[in-house]
Length: 202
Image 1 (tube, one colour):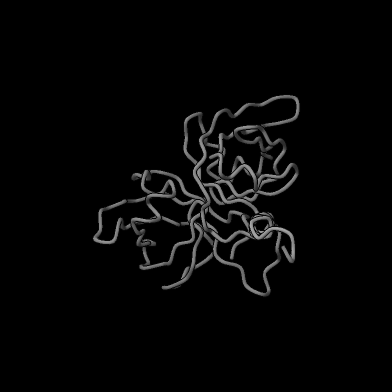
Image 2: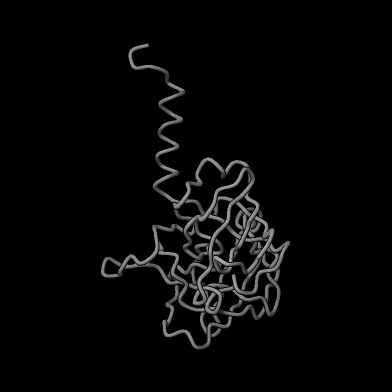
């Protein structure tokens, strides 16, 4: 489990082919956290297991490559990093599992009277989980939905987010990992199940 509060921006050293998919090597120099072998780390919103140290190495399976943006990472790509929470960790963002629900596309990053606003086109099957003023994780960054559109959403980015995460580097056309709020997903799932069953006693 994660909070969506990115702790460090790392850099991809290499993404090489492997039998199970790809082996991802990341330079996390300057991060005050020292990952351990087998630990869970959110890499741009994807929960991965540390398979090697110095540099950090992650084995990314074919399924993950198909449903996230990790397959498009190249040497020099920036990634957001967050270690998993513990019972003693403050929950400063929202509940994030690191299980990507879909890939969105950056439509626009604009600075207006209300600040910097990022517009993202989202897959249609995610739209039921997007609630105005609710939460979403974009490349692992916990954000509040400023506006929900017919085909996507808008989030407002504060200077700290722009400086410390990869979202400050976003340009139109970039693909981003999206994870909807766990609580909303649970509610929608249960309502769909109840609706499919029909009225009680029917």
